[in-house]
Length: 347
Image 1 (cartoon, rainbow, N blue to C red):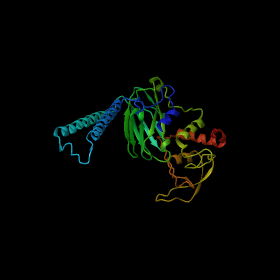
Image 2 (cartoon, rainbow, N blue to C red; image 1 turned 180 degrees about the vertical axis):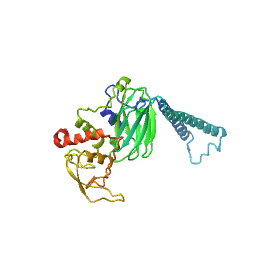
Image 3 (cartoon, helix red, strand yellow; image 1 turned 135 degrees about the vertical axis):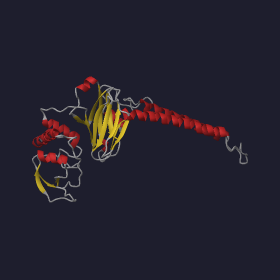
Image 4 (tube, rainbow, N blue to C red; image 1 turned 45 degrees about the vertical axis):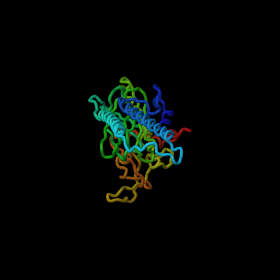
């Protein structure tokens, strides 16, 4: 899967992320070089002892094989104290080296530098939303970082278990609902890299992918994540749809998970509300407008379209989509109702 994404999505200004010259790991693009060094040390130890033990076994099988039925045993040795001490002490030393090396790397990954930028990553089915330090802007599906600048992340899930996994940065941290997780690293190579969810989180788990752009200080200062055009509300809404709504709501009338968005703006829908003790109230009618859109994003069970009561919708809190973005999404839905051909899939 990783190799496929690499081939389909190469970086425009550095060689695409790839395995190293040993064919083992993706390109190291962070400060956690100890992880690779420990990996190769363990790899070399395993190869050395595999060859040594297999060689001794092979030699012994050939050298001391039984040639005749009545051939007596070549020796009757019950133990060898020196040999037993050697094969106990040497592995113990190797294991202690691996432990100390891994402990050092673990400490390096635990202590966040004081000058690290504090980001926030919000995970939900099935995308990532990123919040930038001291900046009102957010991005979904793409993350921008400054090269050689430590980046610390507070991780949060608003639905199920996810995992924040960036192979090139040597970072993986589970994102557990109901608690905050933290991680950090310092990107050291300009380029585009991959961020995956590494815990199965539902139907579109494989699509929960983001691209990480590591850029220069000058490029970072231009706030490349702020791609909204204040003069084009429907276009902004289309971007929000593609990153937040597309997985569950189609534009062509087909049913994916929830109702299709085709022609929905201004439409009168039959809806039901969930009772406090369980079950649903009798159906009522509501017009799909800005107020209904805001309510549905904040509290999906307040008025759910008849026939879709069994479908679970991810609640879009203020952190994920603010009132400005809701208005842009409303402008998109209104434009979609008036000009459906504008948003028809290109064939």
